[in-house]
Length: 348
Image (cartoon, rainbow, N blue to C red; front, side, top):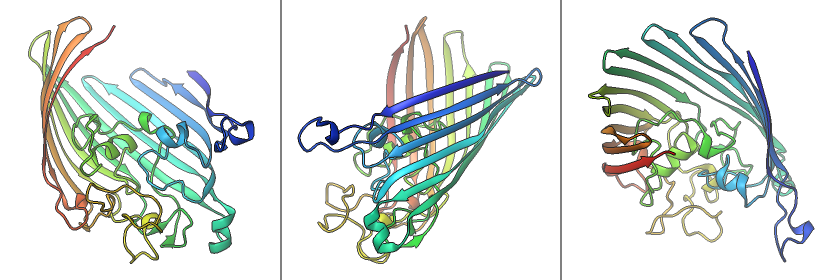
C-alpha cells in the first residue's frame, strides 16, 4: 500500500491589482490538490484510487485556460466566474499468466458558477458537472505476438445544452469529461495517428488536435472500439499495427454557446455580435457540424519500431482514416486522410 499526496499551483491571484502592466487582467487563484491510494491486494492485481479537487477562477489568459481544462473548448469559459471540480474513480490492472486486464473509471462532479451579468438575464447562478469515462484494455502475449483490444466510452454534452448560461438552448449539467490538464488527459487514442494522439496540426478543420488534446471531439464525448497487434521480428525490430472505429457520445452540432439568437440561429462565424469562435479560411464556423451523425469514421495504422542503438529508436508509421458524417462541417463532406510519419526518438 502507498499513498501519494500532491498540490499544484497553476497561477496566483494577481494581475491588474498588482499593476503587472497597464490594463492587465486580474488572473485567478487556480490550483489542484489530491491523493492517490495505491493498493496491491494480492499478486497480479494493482488498484489505484485517485481523488483530485481542482479550482479554476476565470477569466484567465494563462496556464489554466490555455493548456488546461478549457483548451480546445471554444467559449467554454463564457459567463463563468469559478469552477470547483472533483475527480474520483479507479485505475486497475490484473495480470494472470500472459493476459492482462486493465479497467479504468473516472467520474467528474462539481459546480460551475456564472457571472452576475448572465445571472441577471437568465436567473441561473450555477450548474453542475456530471460526467464520466470508462475504459477496458485486454492484452495477451503469444510468443513473439502481443494482441490488444480496447473499449472506451466518455460522456458528452448535447449541442443544444446551455452549459454557459447564455440563455440559448436547454439548461443542462456539464456532461463532457474534461481533465484538469488537457495535455496530460486520458490517453485512450494512443494507437492512432489521425483520429488519435498524433501531433498533427489539423489546420484544415481543426479536428486532429482537438481530438488528441481533449480526449474526445470537442464537448460531444467519445466512443471507441479498437485493436492493436505487435510482432517482435528480432531483438531490434518490432512490427505493429492498429485498427479502430470511432463515434461521439452525443451527435455533433454547432454548440449552443456559439449560436446567434437561438438554437435555430446561425452558428458563429464572422458575426461581430456573436462570441468569438474558430473559423475556417473561408470565414465559416469551424465547429458547425452538419452531418447529423455520431459516426466519426475508422482508422488503420501500421509501422515499425527499430532500435538503432540503446536509447535511439526509429519509428516510421503510415495511417489512413475514412472520416464519417459526424465530421461533416458547413454542409461539406469531411475528406478521407492519409498520413506518413517518420520519427527518430532519442532518450538519454
